[in-house]
Image 1 (cartoon, rainbow over the protein chains, first blue to last red):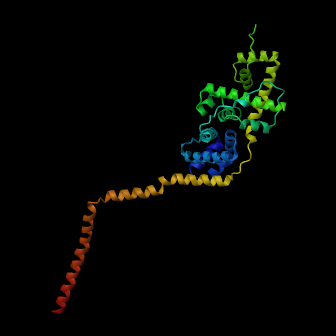
Image 2: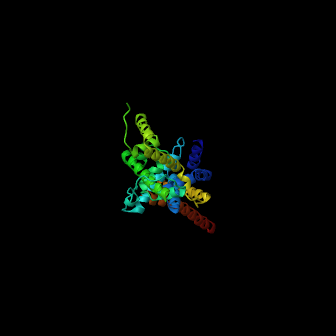
Image 3: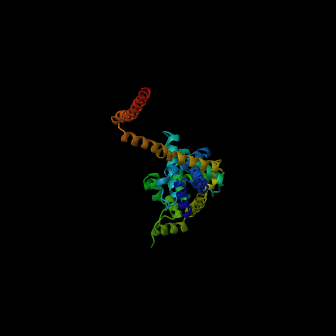
Length: 176
Length: 137
């Protein structure tokens, strides 16, 4: 918290050291969260840059007594949602092709992180976003609902479907 | 006698996620003791949640230069601040000057100013001419 307060105050006063410390403290975290949402390296880098630019434009409205990460996470989530809607156009953000649905209980699952990465990339973006917010960011269902502007029931549904889809995908890999 | 439950994948997920009410959690635990398939599912989700919590490290390394980004942010800060700094001050002074010197007053002030210069000049010219004539007599 003290680090964040110092960063915010330095940036508000226009000190170069403030922006350097802001990037040093949060560039990696913002990038990795953006990547988890969009699953594309260059797009995640573009989103990261935009998150910081928006933060600088809003720097006077930031309260030095509050942590920076919730703000950065909110901007990252909003930008990722806009980006995915724009990129997917008319395509749904929350539907999985039938072929990817669970085939039933199979053998003991065994997967690598690369398998998990691929399975995450194949999920509908909204399912993936709520999954990341729950398991990576450790937000409650209510907090995820507020952040994504989805009803809590929808968040629960997306989480259930996303986990089940991952089980189907990774269990199948275990059989292979 | 405790109530029993059927296999319910969503309840298993929620149980492993730790968000069930204690009474519901007790029901699931009782069911898990009897059902091997659900125990396997619960074990799967436990592993899955664990891996997902560290999924951030799956991202490829970023190619962004932190120093360049910090420079860009400083430039953005200055660009964002500039419109309300120097140009606004110049404009404010201009408005102040024009307000203090309205159009209708400006020609009159100019004439008066020229009049002062003209009267002095006329007096000096007359004085020189009178002195020359007096000297010539």
